[in-house]
Length: 357
Image (tube, rainbow, N blue to C red; front, side):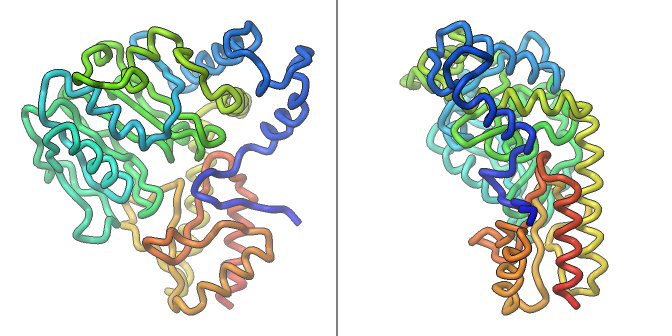
């Protein structure tokens, strides 16, 4: 039986990547060492990390005036690091609230600055993205932060806010590498790796150079982007194995046509699943506004919540795993990141139709 893992994260990885890692587990390229055993300052590992950065820069079109940092602590640590680094003498920052991860970022930033919430989707249970012309921005804000894809509510931006020169900050943890992005429109992009990049434990920060070097007094050394930028992300031991797997994922993406090709597959997968939900005559429903539906995380409910348990149990028996919705919203959630093949979504759709019958 083929297993399809719809977990929101840590999430499915490309089978080819896992197989390559398996082959190289005990002896990387004749070195006699596993990547897990290598000195992070040895030529073998330093070559792995340098290649990973080169490939990520190529995939995303990251120009030389941006630093790519491989750090730890998850996206949640960046919730604090961002105001520490980006306030740069100012005392206020703009945040958009579109769901649980936005709320957590706002809560942490409030420890360091006056936070202006430009708009919120709370009035409709975070099922939509507030129109840009309704945002109430602060003219003195140091930056504007938003979450392009909310994993729990399943809302996703299909546009980039125009901030008129104010640094734009994006938590792309659950959508990075899933569609082309013009990095030059952003001051900072950050992403936990465990959804579209690799295993948990690695976080990627892409930050414009002019935003580095003016931190709040008392900022810990490890929270200062300058520390990592000046030391090629090796001030301390980086998450070496996570970076190695990320590098294999980047190579897999390049081999399969890059981000533009991946976007086409992601559009097809999302359409297949949403079409099945919409054509079910109300047996399944998606709470998200149609214009803001996520390609990565698809929440849906059954017309009778008493059937939820049977749905999950029967799905598990079919090898369709991790479909239970987030504990805060219930229902179901299918996360269909880059590594989820079209066949996996087809298998889910086939099961959903049979279950409804």
